[in-house]
Image 1 (cartoon, rainbow, N blue to C red):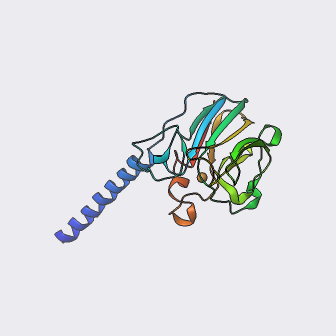
Image 2 (cartoon, rainbow, N blue to C red):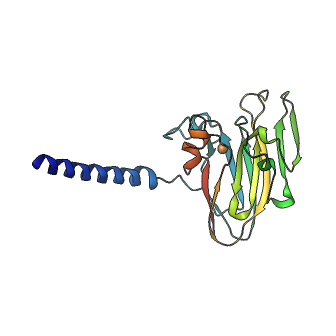
Image 3 (tube, protein in one colour):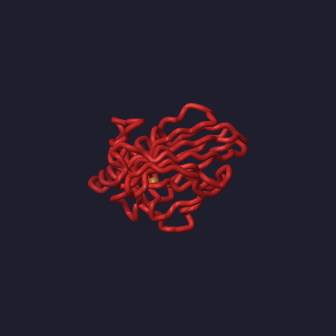
Length: 210
Ligand SMILES: [Cu+2]
């Protein structure tokens, strides 16, 4: 009887400890917020946090995760035009849905891309889509209809270089809008959609519109 009681009590304690740990170590963990609200957003996308050039996060618990940097919590003003620059340093993973190689919801319906072609030569131009197999990540805010595929860096690009992707989009009223990457870029996780794809601060974030 006493043994069974001890077992039940022990189990209850274990569940409480696990719950507190889940809430404290995972659910309440929030990445830092980009200063703002600002009408300009500058981000870097990397194959691994530990390889960041512009915004190193040496104390990050997941140095081998793909990520947007410096953070994915962005603050922007309502009903405004937001100018975005993404320095994209990761190679291509490729989208499952070719429809998503297209740009949606940006001003002018396009993006401007400075990139390196497959021979490593610098190129530049406005684009309304990319070859979906060459996508490294996407910047997507579904509730605003914004979807921008980010061209993977060429294997022949100079070491330490980035594709520079610029575009602008308009915000609506105040609120918290979820944004994320739709490329299954999380190597080593189930179907590439685990870990950084599901964690704020890596491939998912919030656009705080105020
Ligand atoms: Cu991604």
